[in-house]
Image (cartoon, rainbow, N blue to C red; front, side):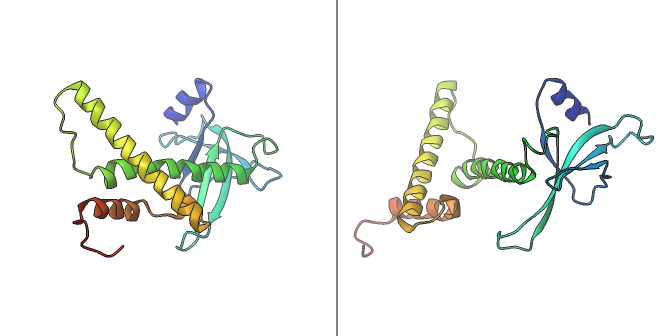
Length: 177
């Protein structure tokens, strides 16, 4: 709650995931199935200082795994202006951005790889190089998806990276086009 209060006091609107088993009593149901509730800090045993939140609960299907329960809390209390479906989709977009960070940090660069440059200019150059390579790989994914009529998010980054690495490390002429 201290972070929630700090961010909201700056004027920020928030959309945060909470555990699906967190008890969030219904103070008032809203037209889109979300509801207003109160949430307390872990140390607030007397529940004297609650924060009013809007709760969006949903299940995510179509991931190839069993449906997963999600529960989001937000400062955006107007269900007409901010429908629950749109907030759930927005939260999913956030994870797509997190996946891009993981692509750069873990898959492309390598989880334990440290930038080797010894100067600030060299570090900047290496960071830009990694970003350019990532952009090129993502462009390849987008073009591949377009030619196959797929959503680019359905193309595997790690498979694209492996293919690109193979294409520059295999001896020319050692395989049939």
